Length: 156
Image 1 (cartoon, rainbow, N blue to C red):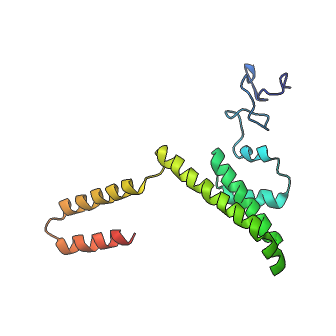
Image 2: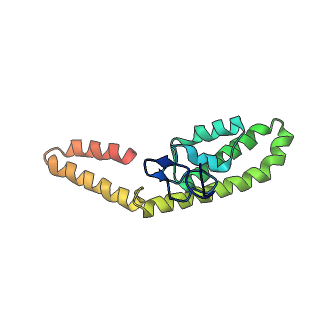
């Protein structure tokens, strides 16, 4: 049993964890069960939880979770509109949410590039050039084969 409402509820051989619980949860990040981060939203609608599950794919990062939730809410809102009139009345809300979603995705991509988790276009081009140089070096007597390989790489 927790003695401090903000402490993690995990209890081990040394007693209760001394870390602060994550906001809205009963465990710290270290002891948070996998997938429990969505509990911070206190979602009770089974359809929304299923949509959230569908979009998540095991993503844990905070910004990714926000994107997942927004996509789930958008999906839910779109599914509520059954008639053309309902779809038209939902248009401003959906447009705003799509704009927000685009900004969040752009921010996520920038953060991932800065963190080294994604390659920038410049890095991809540099890598491709290195691959082509390696192929040319290994097959100097086969210019027609090199041309076919380069053509296939350019289509990717």
